Image (tube, rainbow over all chains, first blue to last red; front, side):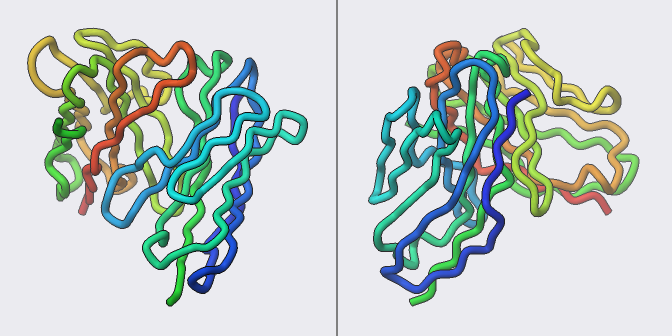
Length: 113
Length: 117
């Protein structure tokens, strides 16, 4: 079956630091990969996505590259801001899972001024 | 264009009572998904519905839980005889299509936080 593994948090950084949140997956079929962000007290919002190998998703300074050879989709940002503090979820959907998204456990990011 | 709406945002029930959670999808969306988020855990899929049809309920507990998405009105997730272990955040998401291409984005509501005393 499908599964997503994310690095455990919390990840604590100072403002303007470089961010990496690791995500690896196992899937049947050819998955699409997603990063969602959840701000306190809110629902999830799509941050970026990639639908095929070597695609790079990007949004608001965040990037992630679909690496089929390493089954990874790591999230990166060159310079984080306090407003980026949130929980980040890696997810995938594929034909093997009937296209029902599978989510990782989430990684909490805390950015200090 | 209003987003996905859920109500109530917070719901407190005593053990044995019923909980009804409502979800109104985005305008034009006919596909609804329900997820449960337990503390320190990710989202767990519960059920996928289209208008008047349950498409996939593989994540729903076999007892006490039911869901519907009538032709008119919001989708309802119903939990009968709640227990403390049902305390969680319940999120609804909608999409415009079935996502068979695997690329459709899901749009999430703000969630209902259920507390069972």
